[in-house]
Length: 457
Image (cartoon, rainbow, N blue to C red; front, side, top):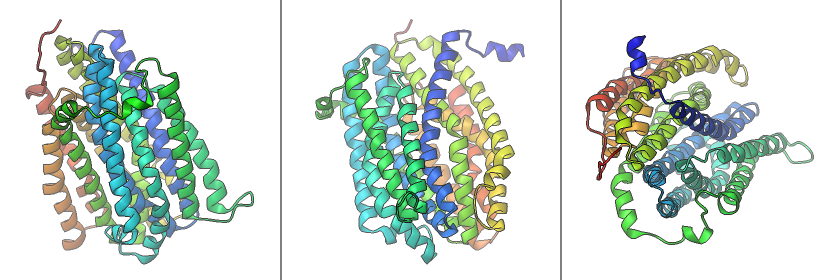
Protein backbone atom coordinates (compact mmCIF):
# COMPACT_ATOMS: atom_id res chain seq x y z
CA UNK A 1 0.00 0.00 0.00
CA UNK A 2 2.85 2.35 0.80
CA UNK A 3 4.37 1.74 -2.63
CA UNK A 4 1.07 2.53 -4.35
CA UNK A 5 0.67 5.71 -2.31
CA UNK A 6 4.11 6.84 -3.45
CA UNK A 7 2.86 6.70 -7.05
CA UNK A 8 -0.11 8.98 -6.39
CA UNK A 9 -0.25 12.72 -6.95
CA UNK A 10 -0.81 14.59 -3.69
CA UNK A 11 -2.46 17.64 -5.28
CA UNK A 12 -6.23 17.78 -4.75
CA UNK A 13 -6.67 20.02 -7.79
CA UNK A 14 -5.28 17.29 -10.06
CA UNK A 15 -8.01 14.83 -9.08
CA UNK A 16 -10.75 17.45 -9.22
CA UNK A 17 -9.68 18.42 -12.74
CA UNK A 18 -9.41 14.81 -13.93
CA UNK A 19 -12.72 13.69 -12.41
CA UNK A 20 -14.66 16.75 -13.55
CA UNK A 21 -13.31 16.56 -17.11
CA UNK A 22 -13.81 12.80 -17.34
CA UNK A 23 -17.32 12.93 -15.87
CA UNK A 24 -18.49 15.75 -18.12
CA UNK A 25 -16.98 14.22 -21.28
CA UNK A 26 -18.33 10.77 -20.35
CA UNK A 27 -21.82 12.14 -19.76
CA UNK A 28 -21.73 13.92 -23.09
CA UNK A 29 -20.41 10.82 -24.87
CA UNK A 30 -22.97 8.52 -23.30
CA UNK A 31 -25.72 10.83 -24.48
CA UNK A 32 -24.20 10.81 -27.99
CA UNK A 33 -24.20 7.01 -27.96
CA UNK A 34 -27.70 6.92 -26.54
CA UNK A 35 -28.90 8.89 -29.57
CA UNK A 36 -27.73 5.89 -31.63
CA UNK A 37 -28.81 3.26 -29.11
CA UNK A 38 -32.37 4.63 -29.04
CA UNK A 39 -32.48 3.99 -32.79
CA UNK A 40 -31.12 0.49 -32.20
CA UNK A 41 -33.44 -0.45 -29.32
CA UNK A 42 -36.60 1.09 -30.75
CA UNK A 43 -35.96 -0.23 -34.26
CA UNK A 44 -35.09 -3.59 -32.66
CA UNK A 45 -38.62 -3.69 -31.30
CA UNK A 46 -39.89 -3.00 -34.82
CA UNK A 47 -38.10 -5.95 -36.49
CA UNK A 48 -34.82 -7.93 -36.32
CA UNK A 49 -33.99 -7.12 -39.96
CA UNK A 50 -34.42 -3.42 -39.23
CA UNK A 51 -32.12 -3.73 -36.21
CA UNK A 52 -29.47 -5.48 -38.28
CA UNK A 53 -29.77 -2.88 -41.06
CA UNK A 54 -29.29 -0.04 -38.59
CA UNK A 55 -26.28 -1.89 -37.18
CA UNK A 56 -24.60 -1.94 -40.60
CA UNK A 57 -25.14 1.79 -41.05
CA UNK A 58 -23.84 2.47 -37.55
CA UNK A 59 -20.53 0.95 -38.64
CA UNK A 60 -20.26 3.69 -41.24
CA UNK A 61 -21.16 6.20 -38.55
CA UNK A 62 -18.39 4.68 -36.45
CA UNK A 63 -15.94 5.16 -39.34
CA UNK A 64 -16.97 8.81 -39.53
CA UNK A 65 -16.72 9.14 -35.76
CA UNK A 66 -13.22 7.67 -35.65
CA UNK A 67 -12.07 9.81 -38.58
CA UNK A 68 -13.44 13.01 -37.06
CA UNK A 69 -12.10 12.03 -33.63
CA UNK A 70 -8.66 11.60 -35.16
CA UNK A 71 -8.88 15.08 -36.65
CA UNK A 72 -10.12 16.85 -33.53
CA UNK A 73 -7.86 14.96 -31.12
CA UNK A 74 -4.87 15.95 -33.21
CA UNK A 75 -6.07 19.55 -32.92
CA UNK A 76 -6.71 19.14 -29.19
CA UNK A 77 -3.01 18.37 -28.59
CA UNK A 78 -2.09 21.80 -29.98
CA UNK A 79 -5.05 23.65 -28.49
CA UNK A 80 -4.45 22.31 -24.95
CA UNK A 81 -0.80 23.38 -25.11
CA UNK A 82 -1.83 26.80 -26.45
CA UNK A 83 -4.34 27.09 -23.58
CA UNK A 84 -1.59 26.27 -21.09
CA UNK A 85 0.60 28.95 -22.67
CA UNK A 86 -2.25 31.49 -22.62
CA UNK A 87 -2.38 31.77 -26.44
CA UNK A 88 -6.10 32.00 -27.22
CA UNK A 89 -5.33 33.00 -30.81
CA UNK A 90 -3.71 29.58 -31.28
CA UNK A 91 -6.88 27.88 -30.03
CA UNK A 92 -8.97 29.85 -32.53
CA UNK A 93 -6.69 29.07 -35.47
CA UNK A 94 -6.70 25.38 -34.63
CA UNK A 95 -10.50 25.40 -34.39
CA UNK A 96 -10.65 26.85 -37.89
CA UNK A 97 -8.35 24.13 -39.24
CA UNK A 98 -10.05 21.20 -37.51
CA UNK A 99 -13.54 22.40 -38.52
CA UNK A 100 -12.62 22.59 -42.20
CA UNK A 101 -10.82 19.25 -42.25
CA UNK A 102 -13.54 17.44 -40.25
CA UNK A 103 -16.39 18.75 -42.42
CA UNK A 104 -14.38 17.99 -45.57
CA UNK A 105 -13.88 14.37 -44.56
CA UNK A 106 -17.55 14.03 -43.60
CA UNK A 107 -18.61 15.34 -47.01
CA UNK A 108 -16.39 12.79 -48.76
CA UNK A 109 -18.06 9.96 -46.83
CA UNK A 110 -21.44 11.60 -47.51
CA UNK A 111 -20.81 11.57 -51.27
CA UNK A 112 -19.74 7.91 -51.35
CA UNK A 113 -22.63 6.63 -49.23
CA UNK A 114 -25.25 8.82 -50.95
CA UNK A 115 -24.16 7.66 -54.42
CA UNK A 116 -23.53 3.98 -53.62
CA UNK A 117 -25.60 2.93 -50.56
CA UNK A 118 -26.21 -0.64 -51.78
CA UNK A 119 -22.58 -1.14 -52.74
CA UNK A 120 -21.29 0.12 -49.39
CA UNK A 121 -23.66 -1.99 -47.27
CA UNK A 122 -23.07 -5.07 -49.45
CA UNK A 123 -19.49 -5.01 -48.19
CA UNK A 124 -20.80 -5.55 -44.65
CA UNK A 125 -23.51 -8.17 -45.21
CA UNK A 126 -24.89 -10.52 -47.85
CA UNK A 127 -28.44 -10.60 -46.48
CA UNK A 128 -30.75 -8.81 -48.96
CA UNK A 129 -33.46 -8.01 -46.38
CA UNK A 130 -30.93 -6.50 -43.96
CA UNK A 131 -29.31 -4.47 -46.75
CA UNK A 132 -32.70 -3.12 -47.90
CA UNK A 133 -33.45 -1.87 -44.39
CA UNK A 134 -29.96 -0.42 -44.10
CA UNK A 135 -30.21 1.48 -47.40
CA UNK A 136 -33.43 3.21 -46.31
CA UNK A 137 -31.72 4.27 -43.08
CA UNK A 138 -28.41 5.31 -44.70
CA UNK A 139 -29.91 7.52 -47.41
CA UNK A 140 -31.21 9.85 -44.70
CA UNK A 141 -28.43 9.44 -42.13
CA UNK A 142 -25.76 10.74 -44.52
CA UNK A 143 -27.17 14.25 -44.04
CA UNK A 144 -26.19 14.07 -40.35
CA UNK A 145 -22.50 13.56 -41.19
CA UNK A 146 -21.41 17.21 -41.73
CA UNK A 147 -23.53 18.30 -38.75
CA UNK A 148 -21.80 15.74 -36.53
CA UNK A 149 -18.34 16.72 -37.82
CA UNK A 150 -18.73 20.44 -37.13
CA UNK A 151 -20.26 19.75 -33.71
CA UNK A 152 -17.31 17.58 -32.69
CA UNK A 153 -14.75 20.13 -33.91
CA UNK A 154 -16.33 22.90 -31.85
CA UNK A 155 -16.70 20.64 -28.80
CA UNK A 156 -13.04 19.64 -29.03
CA UNK A 157 -12.05 23.31 -29.01
CA UNK A 158 -14.11 23.83 -25.85
CA UNK A 159 -12.64 20.74 -24.20
CA UNK A 160 -9.11 21.98 -24.84
CA UNK A 161 -9.86 25.03 -22.67
CA UNK A 162 -11.58 22.86 -20.02
CA UNK A 163 -15.16 23.80 -20.96
CA UNK A 164 -17.11 20.56 -21.08
CA UNK A 165 -20.58 20.98 -19.55
CA UNK A 166 -22.15 22.46 -22.68
CA UNK A 167 -21.43 19.21 -24.53
CA UNK A 168 -23.57 17.34 -22.03
CA UNK A 169 -26.36 19.90 -22.25
CA UNK A 170 -26.49 19.90 -26.06
CA UNK A 171 -26.33 16.11 -26.31
CA UNK A 172 -29.07 15.69 -23.68
CA UNK A 173 -31.26 18.02 -25.71
CA UNK A 174 -30.53 15.92 -28.82
CA UNK A 175 -31.32 12.67 -26.98
CA UNK A 176 -34.67 13.86 -25.67
CA UNK A 177 -35.59 15.11 -29.14
CA UNK A 178 -34.52 11.82 -30.71
CA UNK A 179 -36.47 9.72 -28.20
CA UNK A 180 -39.71 11.63 -28.75
CA UNK A 181 -39.41 11.71 -32.53
CA UNK A 182 -38.36 8.04 -32.69
CA UNK A 183 -41.52 7.01 -30.86
CA UNK A 184 -43.68 9.11 -33.14
CA UNK A 185 -42.03 8.31 -36.47
CA UNK A 186 -40.96 4.67 -36.14
CA UNK A 187 -44.27 3.36 -34.82
CA UNK A 188 -46.62 5.93 -36.36
CA UNK A 189 -47.99 7.77 -33.33
CA UNK A 190 -49.89 11.07 -32.97
CA UNK A 191 -51.13 10.91 -36.53
CA UNK A 192 -47.71 10.33 -38.09
CA UNK A 193 -47.46 7.43 -40.58
CA UNK A 194 -45.46 4.36 -39.47
CA UNK A 195 -42.01 4.93 -41.01
CA UNK A 196 -39.80 2.22 -39.46
CA UNK A 197 -36.08 2.76 -40.06
CA UNK A 198 -36.77 5.91 -42.08
CA UNK A 199 -38.48 7.41 -39.05
CA UNK A 200 -35.43 6.62 -36.89
CA UNK A 201 -33.15 8.30 -39.43
CA UNK A 202 -35.29 11.45 -39.72
CA UNK A 203 -35.46 11.70 -35.92
CA UNK A 204 -31.66 11.51 -35.65
CA UNK A 205 -31.20 14.11 -38.41
CA UNK A 206 -33.44 16.60 -36.62
CA UNK A 207 -31.73 15.87 -33.28
CA UNK A 208 -28.22 16.40 -34.74
CA UNK A 209 -29.33 19.69 -36.30
CA UNK A 210 -30.68 20.98 -32.99
CA UNK A 211 -27.53 19.79 -31.17
CA UNK A 212 -25.29 21.80 -33.52
CA UNK A 213 -27.55 24.84 -33.10
CA UNK A 214 -27.15 24.75 -29.31
CA UNK A 215 -23.35 24.42 -29.61
CA UNK A 216 -23.10 27.33 -32.06
CA UNK A 217 -25.21 29.58 -29.83
CA UNK A 218 -22.89 28.81 -26.90
CA UNK A 219 -19.62 29.14 -28.82
CA UNK A 220 -20.46 32.35 -30.67
CA UNK A 221 -22.71 34.14 -28.16
CA UNK A 222 -22.04 32.90 -24.60
CA UNK A 223 -18.48 31.53 -24.23
CA UNK A 224 -16.04 33.98 -22.61
CA UNK A 225 -12.83 31.93 -22.73
CA UNK A 226 -12.18 31.71 -26.46
CA UNK A 227 -14.68 34.32 -27.70
CA UNK A 228 -14.72 32.76 -31.16
CA UNK A 229 -16.51 34.58 -33.97
CA UNK A 230 -17.98 32.79 -37.01
CA UNK A 231 -15.68 34.74 -39.34
CA UNK A 232 -12.64 33.42 -37.45
CA UNK A 233 -13.42 29.94 -38.75
CA UNK A 234 -12.90 31.12 -42.33
CA UNK A 235 -9.13 31.92 -42.52
CA UNK A 236 -6.70 29.05 -43.06
CA UNK A 237 -3.27 29.30 -41.43
CA UNK A 238 -1.11 27.32 -43.87
CA UNK A 239 1.99 27.34 -41.68
CA UNK A 240 0.06 26.09 -38.65
CA UNK A 241 -1.67 23.46 -40.78
CA UNK A 242 1.70 22.05 -41.86
CA UNK A 243 2.75 21.75 -38.22
CA UNK A 244 -0.62 20.27 -37.29
CA UNK A 245 -0.51 17.79 -40.16
CA UNK A 246 2.95 16.57 -39.19
CA UNK A 247 1.78 15.71 -35.67
CA UNK A 248 -1.94 15.20 -36.30
CA UNK A 249 -1.77 13.07 -39.45
CA UNK A 250 -0.89 9.86 -37.53
CA UNK A 251 -3.84 10.51 -35.21
CA UNK A 252 -6.18 11.00 -38.17
CA UNK A 253 -4.96 7.99 -40.15
CA UNK A 254 -5.03 5.88 -37.01
CA UNK A 255 -8.69 6.82 -36.56
CA UNK A 256 -9.52 6.14 -40.21
CA UNK A 257 -7.79 2.76 -40.27
CA UNK A 258 -9.38 1.84 -36.95
CA UNK A 259 -12.81 2.79 -38.32
CA UNK A 260 -12.24 0.68 -41.44
CA UNK A 261 -11.04 -2.16 -39.24
CA UNK A 262 -14.24 -2.02 -37.19
CA UNK A 263 -16.25 -2.16 -40.42
CA UNK A 264 -14.28 -5.23 -41.49
CA UNK A 265 -14.90 -6.79 -38.09
CA UNK A 266 -18.61 -6.25 -38.64
CA UNK A 267 -18.26 -7.68 -42.16
CA UNK A 268 -16.58 -10.82 -40.80
CA UNK A 269 -19.52 -11.45 -38.48
CA UNK A 270 -22.03 -9.92 -40.92
CA UNK A 271 -21.51 -12.63 -43.52
CA UNK A 272 -22.49 -15.39 -41.09
CA UNK A 273 -26.10 -15.39 -39.81
CA UNK A 274 -28.78 -12.87 -38.84
CA UNK A 275 -28.53 -14.00 -35.22
CA UNK A 276 -24.82 -13.23 -35.12
CA UNK A 277 -25.38 -9.80 -36.69
CA UNK A 278 -28.09 -8.99 -34.13
CA UNK A 279 -25.98 -10.31 -31.23
CA UNK A 280 -22.98 -8.25 -32.32
CA UNK A 281 -25.23 -5.21 -32.64
CA UNK A 282 -26.48 -5.55 -29.06
CA UNK A 283 -23.05 -6.29 -27.57
CA UNK A 284 -21.31 -3.50 -29.50
CA UNK A 285 -23.94 -0.95 -28.57
CA UNK A 286 -23.78 -1.90 -24.89
CA UNK A 287 -19.99 -1.70 -24.95
CA UNK A 288 -20.11 1.75 -26.57
CA UNK A 289 -22.29 3.08 -23.76
CA UNK A 290 -20.60 1.25 -20.88
CA UNK A 291 -17.09 2.26 -21.95
CA UNK A 292 -17.73 6.00 -22.23
CA UNK A 293 -15.86 6.73 -18.99
CA UNK A 294 -12.91 4.70 -20.27
CA UNK A 295 -12.63 6.74 -23.46
CA UNK A 296 -13.47 10.00 -21.70
CA UNK A 297 -10.56 9.45 -19.31
CA UNK A 298 -8.22 9.35 -22.30
CA UNK A 299 -9.52 12.69 -23.60
CA UNK A 300 -9.38 14.25 -20.13
CA UNK A 301 -5.81 13.00 -19.73
CA UNK A 302 -4.81 14.53 -23.07
CA UNK A 303 -6.12 17.91 -21.89
CA UNK A 304 -4.26 17.65 -18.55
CA UNK A 305 -0.96 16.49 -20.05
CA UNK A 306 -1.18 18.98 -22.94
CA UNK A 307 -1.93 21.90 -20.64
CA UNK A 308 0.85 20.89 -18.24
CA UNK A 309 3.33 20.82 -21.12
CA UNK A 310 2.06 24.22 -22.30
CA UNK A 311 2.62 25.60 -18.81
CA UNK A 312 6.17 24.09 -18.91
CA UNK A 313 5.58 22.21 -15.66
CA UNK A 314 7.38 19.19 -17.06
CA UNK A 315 8.66 17.94 -13.71
CA UNK A 316 5.08 16.99 -12.78
CA UNK A 317 4.48 14.72 -15.76
CA UNK A 318 6.23 11.50 -14.56
CA UNK A 319 4.16 11.41 -11.37
CA UNK A 320 1.01 12.38 -13.26
CA UNK A 321 1.51 9.47 -15.67
CA UNK A 322 1.98 6.92 -12.87
CA UNK A 323 -1.12 8.10 -11.01
CA UNK A 324 -3.20 8.09 -14.17
CA UNK A 325 -2.16 4.52 -15.02
CA UNK A 326 -3.50 3.27 -11.70
CA UNK A 327 -6.75 5.16 -12.27
CA UNK A 328 -7.11 3.65 -15.76
CA UNK A 329 -6.83 0.13 -14.34
CA UNK A 330 -9.49 0.88 -11.73
CA UNK A 331 -11.88 2.27 -14.35
CA UNK A 332 -11.39 -0.82 -16.50
CA UNK A 333 -12.22 -3.22 -13.69
CA UNK A 334 -15.36 -1.28 -12.70
CA UNK A 335 -16.56 -1.11 -16.31
CA UNK A 336 -15.98 -4.84 -16.79
CA UNK A 337 -18.03 -5.69 -13.72
CA UNK A 338 -20.90 -3.49 -14.93
CA UNK A 339 -21.01 -5.14 -18.37
CA UNK A 340 -20.96 -8.59 -16.76
CA UNK A 341 -23.75 -7.81 -14.29
CA UNK A 342 -26.03 -5.97 -16.73
CA UNK A 343 -25.70 -8.23 -19.78
CA UNK A 344 -28.88 -10.24 -19.13
CA UNK A 345 -31.17 -7.31 -18.17
CA UNK A 346 -30.02 -5.45 -21.30
CA UNK A 347 -30.67 -8.46 -23.52
CA UNK A 348 -34.24 -8.50 -22.23
CA UNK A 349 -34.86 -5.10 -23.85
CA UNK A 350 -34.49 -6.53 -27.36
CA UNK A 351 -37.09 -8.45 -29.34
CA UNK A 352 -34.68 -10.84 -31.05
CA UNK A 353 -34.38 -14.62 -31.19
CA UNK A 354 -33.20 -16.68 -28.21
CA UNK A 355 -30.11 -17.68 -30.21
CA UNK A 356 -29.22 -14.01 -30.76
CA UNK A 357 -29.67 -13.31 -27.05
CA UNK A 358 -27.44 -16.25 -26.06
CA UNK A 359 -24.71 -15.13 -28.46
CA UNK A 360 -25.03 -11.55 -27.25
CA UNK A 361 -24.54 -12.68 -23.64
CA UNK A 362 -21.40 -14.59 -24.67
CA UNK A 363 -20.05 -11.59 -26.57
CA UNK A 364 -20.65 -9.30 -23.60
CA UNK A 365 -18.86 -11.75 -21.32
CA UNK A 366 -15.80 -11.42 -23.56
CA UNK A 367 -16.10 -7.62 -23.54
CA UNK A 368 -16.35 -7.55 -19.74
CA UNK A 369 -12.83 -8.97 -19.67
CA UNK A 370 -11.19 -7.15 -22.59
CA UNK A 371 -12.51 -3.74 -21.49
CA UNK A 372 -9.92 -3.74 -18.69
CA UNK A 373 -7.25 -3.85 -21.37
CA UNK A 374 -9.02 -1.17 -23.39
CA UNK A 375 -9.21 1.12 -20.36
CA UNK A 376 -5.48 0.92 -19.71
CA UNK A 377 -3.90 0.81 -23.16
CA UNK A 378 -6.26 3.24 -24.89
CA UNK A 379 -5.95 5.89 -22.19
CA UNK A 380 -2.18 5.50 -21.99
CA UNK A 381 -1.76 5.68 -25.75
CA UNK A 382 -4.28 8.42 -26.60
CA UNK A 383 -4.16 10.36 -23.34
CA UNK A 384 -0.50 10.32 -22.29
CA UNK A 385 1.68 9.25 -25.22
CA UNK A 386 -0.17 11.22 -27.89
CA UNK A 387 -0.50 14.34 -25.75
CA UNK A 388 3.21 14.06 -25.05
CA UNK A 389 3.80 14.47 -28.78
CA UNK A 390 4.59 10.91 -29.91
CA UNK A 391 1.57 10.41 -32.16
CA UNK A 392 3.35 8.14 -34.62
CA UNK A 393 3.90 5.36 -32.08
CA UNK A 394 0.17 4.87 -31.42
CA UNK A 395 -0.51 4.79 -35.15
CA UNK A 396 2.10 2.08 -35.68
CA UNK A 397 0.85 -0.09 -32.80
CA UNK A 398 -2.81 0.14 -33.82
CA UNK A 399 -2.08 -0.50 -37.49
CA UNK A 400 0.33 -3.38 -36.99
CA UNK A 401 -1.76 -5.35 -34.50
CA UNK A 402 -5.12 -4.77 -36.16
CA UNK A 403 -4.15 -5.44 -39.77
CA UNK A 404 -1.43 -8.05 -39.25
CA UNK A 405 -2.92 -10.03 -36.36
CA UNK A 406 -6.53 -9.32 -35.36
CA UNK A 407 -8.26 -9.21 -38.75
CA UNK A 408 -6.38 -12.12 -40.39
CA UNK A 409 -6.82 -14.35 -37.33
CA UNK A 410 -10.53 -13.48 -37.08
CA UNK A 411 -11.08 -14.22 -40.76
CA UNK A 412 -9.37 -17.61 -40.43
CA UNK A 413 -11.44 -18.38 -37.33
CA UNK A 414 -14.75 -17.60 -39.05
CA UNK A 415 -14.23 -18.96 -42.56
CA UNK A 416 -11.31 -21.40 -42.59
CA UNK A 417 -11.31 -23.13 -39.21
CA UNK A 418 -15.04 -22.40 -38.66
CA UNK A 419 -14.57 -22.03 -34.93
CA UNK A 420 -17.56 -21.08 -32.73
CA UNK A 421 -18.73 -17.50 -33.16
CA UNK A 422 -17.61 -16.55 -29.66
CA UNK A 423 -14.05 -17.69 -30.48
CA UNK A 424 -14.07 -15.43 -33.54
CA UNK A 425 -15.30 -12.61 -31.30
CA UNK A 426 -12.40 -13.26 -28.90
CA UNK A 427 -10.00 -13.02 -31.84
CA UNK A 428 -11.54 -9.67 -32.75
CA UNK A 429 -11.16 -8.20 -29.26
CA UNK A 430 -8.08 -9.97 -27.86
CA UNK A 431 -5.61 -7.35 -29.09
CA UNK A 432 -6.87 -5.05 -26.32
CA UNK A 433 -5.04 -7.18 -23.77
CA UNK A 434 -1.87 -7.50 -25.84
CA UNK A 435 -1.64 -3.74 -26.27
CA UNK A 436 -1.44 -3.31 -22.49
CA UNK A 437 2.09 -4.72 -22.39
CA UNK A 438 3.18 -2.38 -25.18
CA UNK A 439 1.55 0.63 -23.52
CA UNK A 440 3.13 -0.17 -20.15
CA UNK A 441 6.61 -0.37 -21.66
CA UNK A 442 6.20 2.81 -23.72
CA UNK A 443 4.85 5.09 -21.00
CA UNK A 444 7.22 3.89 -18.27
CA UNK A 445 10.44 3.17 -20.16
CA UNK A 446 10.09 4.71 -23.63
CA UNK A 447 10.69 8.21 -24.96
CA UNK A 448 7.30 9.82 -25.63
CA UNK A 449 7.62 13.41 -24.34
CA UNK A 450 8.30 15.60 -27.39
CA UNK A 451 8.83 19.25 -26.38
CA UNK A 452 10.91 21.70 -28.39
CA UNK A 453 11.52 24.06 -25.47
CA UNK A 454 12.11 21.95 -22.37
CA UNK A 455 12.51 24.78 -19.88
CA UNK A 456 10.33 24.00 -16.92
CA UNK A 457 9.54 25.08 -13.42
